[in-house]
Structure formats: structure tokens, C-alpha cells
Length: 305
Ligand code: RIB
Ligand code: CA
Image (tube, rainbow, N blue to C red; front, side, top):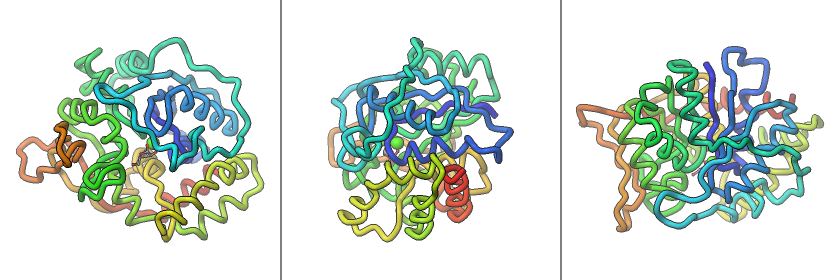
């Protein structure tokens, strides 16, 4: 399977991006990384993705995408990911630059070129994907898989009481994507809360001596801020869990079929991802539990190489 990773890197995005770049996955090939404004502005995301690719020592084209949501103004998550988006760890700056082609155009082009064999994993707001859907209305039929880290299936939001950040950052785009696709694999926020990486595993990765491990330890110092502020009993890693599901669906322990619809109103429910279990045309497989130990092994493998 070929893949595009769409990302607003972000610390947890960066952790996820390394996961396919190990010898374990010969059947998965990352064709491109598309970037979008989310945790931080897309200009910073481009730099962060370049820095991660540098430490992974891999050559993958970066395509810069939308610098703002479809309608409302940008909300960011710099308080969680640092002003630079990678924990303000002072990591080495990259020389890599994005391609000329816009992310949405790259998604459309590659979906056509690899029809039926291209998966797209969305780790940030869905702005690029909604735009791509309007550039090529057949995109949902061309893509083999769409895996989305997003939604709050129990409405335990992290951006508002009802809404998860990736959806809340651009609800209109999320509405378009869930209305156009018929089989989205969704990894909701609550799974990463209910199944956090144990600090013991996290500290073991940070203690690694490889270049990857040193980079991981640097950018994840921000985890200690999360722990102090929220009293987390482990490390919530939503994007890496979505990547684990994309790489190996055996990670899924329990899933629900539902019609997911995103509220684009202006009330307290804005960006709520409502799940209709009785709808005759479900559009999503909502992952509600994973085999987390297997996911932690994938992450540790990728960052201690
Ligand atoms: O709600 C968690 C999601 O929002 C993750 O993708 C994180 O990187 C932020 O983008
Ligand atoms: Ca993200």
C-alpha cells in the first residue's frame, strides 16, 4: 500500500511520521507528506516535517497545504506543542523545502496515479482533504483508505467540551470529508486518553542513544508540561495510534460502525462529531479500543533504531 501522510506536526504527529520508516513494513511506502495549518502554522509544519525526515534519513517530498481553515480563523495548539510545534527543543533546522505543487493537488494527482492502492492518513485538520474532494469529486472512490485521527466519539473534547482539536480547527472541512467518504477509519481522541503510553516505556525511548532517540527525547520534553498541567498518568499519543491502525489493522481491538456527521453550527456543539449507529448508510469505522502494547512496540522500534 502507498500512503500520503497529511499532518500539522506537532509533537505527536512527528512521533507518528517515523513509524512506517522501519524495515518491518515492506508493503507500506510513503509517497508524500502533505502539511496543513493546525497545531502551528503550516510554514512551521513544513520545517518540522523536514527536521523529522532529516533525522530519519529518508527522502520523501513535502507538499505545503492550506495555511488556514476553510471558514473561521486559525486556532493553534502551541501551548501543547511549543511555539515551533516540536516542543521548542532547539532541534536542528532543516535545509529541506516543500515542493511547488500544493498539497491538495498532490493528493489528487497521486490518488489518480495510484487508484485503488493509495491510503491517506490525516493527522491534522481536514482542510487539505476537503479541498482535494472539491478539486476531484471522485477522490473518495480513488483512495483505497482514509484514516483520520480526529473526533470525540464520547464528546470528551480537548478543544471544547464537545469537540476534538482536528475537527474543531476546521469543522466545515471535516463536515465535507465525512459527508463525501463512505468508509473512514476514525481514531478518536478518547482512545488516546483511555490508553496512554506508560511513562516507563516513554522514558525508555528517551534514554536511547541513537540519533532518532535523542531527537525524540528533545521534542517530547513537552510531555512533562502535559503531565504537570493535566495530571496525565501516561502519555496520550493520538496520531501515533492512528498511524498504528493504518499500518496494521490488527491493532484495532474494538470498532463501531456509524454515520459520523460534524456539527458546523455556532452553538456549544460546534465541531461535535455525532455518531448515528442506526443510520442505514454508515460512513465510518470508529475505533474505540486498540491493542496498545503492540502500538507502543511500533513506536519504540521506530524511535530507537
Ligand atoms: O486532538 C489531537 C490532535 O490534535 C492530534 O492530531 C494533535 O497533533 C493535534 O493536531
Ligand atoms: Ca496532529
